Image 1: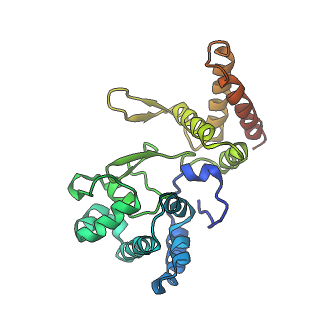
Image 2: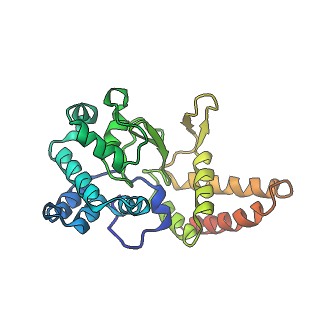
Length: 248
């Protein structure tokens, strides 16, 4: 699934990592051709709207954005993602520092400690990711981040999710992301790792209908014991999402 560069980024897209495909790499290189002369707009177009949003939120200088885009371009030309950890081991400390800064990592990158997935996602801009172990979470260096909808979610759900989340404030959106993620997985409280539910494949629209139906049933069941305002905030959202999914 590919996403066009847009000045108006849908709210849900900030919390989704698209799988980089051939269109991503072709678009990246095409946009970056102009960045060689110091065109920051071209570099931002290559890195995509989610990375641009992150850069703006931390006030990242244009020079650093250009360096990050250039470093990724070199990695793609060398097929660095095919064996990302080995590729990173050959980078000088200055380049690793660029990756650390671009991904807002607190500690310097120690390549030996990375998983292959953690290494690969350092070579992608925010908003894109590879999930090599299939747990629907993404190692980025040593950090671990979620993403929703799942990368294999059917288009009907993605469209319904975008419509339902339009206009939500960030706190409510994040709560709904977390609730939906939990409906597809269970968490080991000792390790913090998640296990996907075999009975609810994320590639099937029926799974999302079941999840939303179960969430609504839970809200109705616990309506009088929930914290004040939770039912009133959440039930209308899931009813709207349920109606959109019924029509999908």
